[in-house]
Amino acid sequence: NDLLKTHARLFYTIEALGKRELHGEAFREINVRGNRLDTPEKIESFFTSRGVSKADLQKAGFAVNTNLGRAIDLNKRYRITSTPTVVVNGKYVTDASMAGGEDKLFEVINALAAKEKPAS
Image 1 (cartoon, rainbow, N blue to C red):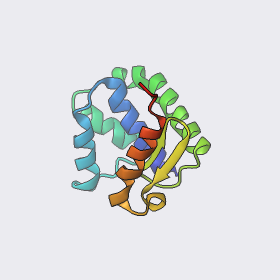
Image 2 (cartoon, rainbow, N blue to C red):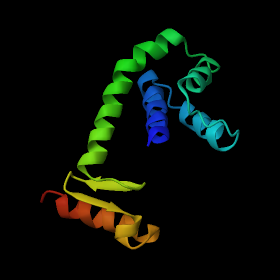
Image 3 (cartoon, rainbow, N blue to C red):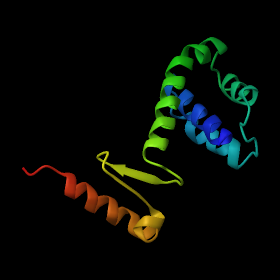
């Protein structure tokens, strides 16, 4: 999905810039202000209006592309079709539907994590 890839690029750009405080700002921009941040121009404007230079955005590009490629690979490898999806220790994949509902999801995650915890 191109929009999801665009938003993943936005996420990884925030991370690469070390500006985690912008995650909430990006959420509000998309969900409250109605700016979908769905084009490179809108994303660039979002960052530059918050003091990030175009040069810094360009410098972040390699890390962003690397992380995006890894995310795409993991999505394919684990056949992720919904969010949230959780992979435990590279072996088990679960989501709310598989767990029997959102309220059971953390029970399943904790049980799988306990199963994978090495004996002390």
